[in-house]
Amino acid sequence: MDRTVGLVGAGSMAQALVSGWLGGRSALPAGSVWACNRSRDDRLTALAAMGAAVTRDKGELCAAATTIVLAVKPVDAAAALSALAPHLSAERHLLISLVAGLSAEAIAVLSGQPDLPVVRAMSNTPSAVGSAATAIAAGPAASAAHLETARALLSAVGDVIVVDEADLAAVTALSGSGPAYVYLLMEALHQAAGRLGLPPEVGRRLTAQTVLGAAKLALVSEHTPHELVRQVASPGGTTVAALEVLDARGFSQALVDAVVRAAERAGELGLAASAAALPEGGAALELPVRP
Ligand SMILES: NC(=O)c1ccc[n+]([C@@H]2O[C@H](COP(=O)([O-])OP(=O)(O)OC[C@H]3O[C@@H](n4cnc5c(N)ncnc54)[C@H](OP(=O)(O)O)[C@@H]3O)[C@@H](O)[C@H]2O)c1
Image (cartoon, rainbow, N blue to C red; front, side, top):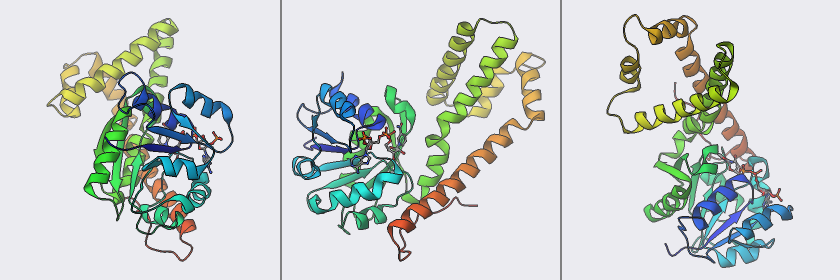
């Protein structure tokens, strides 16, 4: 890929990306990754140790890099974009935003470049171990080639799937927040293991490997999750006894309701973030979940 990348933000997501780009598999050549942050030297030092060129000067970063990756918290995005604005060019730069909620149109406005190609991405915390579920969406000015660049760069930290921008609130609820639902399930399984007298380390390993193995099987299997449940549950057996308890307590419905509520909340936060960026209430609003 003949692209140089400039990370704005040097936190967890930046670390995962630099590790994917310059670590074992070396997806990018040395010297092609730049990073800047706001104040913490230790974070820049960590990225420099991984092979990134680091700077505090956004002008230097934008001069060196053709793809800018915005990896700051949503609350810091407007300030970061206005600091980038004088150095960005719609002809030269692609901006990939990892920031939840802020629409591509709002990003282009905040960056002072209405025609700036923007690709939005929603990733999740397993990016730290190269197993993210990331969805990307092209903004109005992004071409198929821009989308492909974003896909190639983000695949360094896991799986990447292309969606419409309007679907990012649903993605945020499903896979962005998703690790929390799985960890809650794992915590409950740990508790059950303890109640049944298993040593904590045995419960922890069996739980994690069960989640990992079930996910791997679901990814490659031609069967639906419903059919995979049936394969584990023989009539009159232990799994069926457990499933009866889960059914009686509304386990599946509670999860569905939780994800729908998360999507509504992502829509609300997206509206707030984009409306703040576009005080005249422009059209750059993330759509709330469909009924
Ligand atoms: N971590 C994940 O797995 C994950 C998953 C999904 C989505 N995301 C999204 O990805 C984005 C980054 O998340 P993160 O976990 O990496 O955050 P983080 O660890 O808090 O790092 C944020 C970075 O942004 C820097 N920053 C803040 N304002 C800045 C500015 N004006 N100019 C330059 N740098 C600035 C901070 O600088 P200092 O170092 O000086 O404090 C810090 O390095 C967020 O929008 C988050 O919602 C992350």
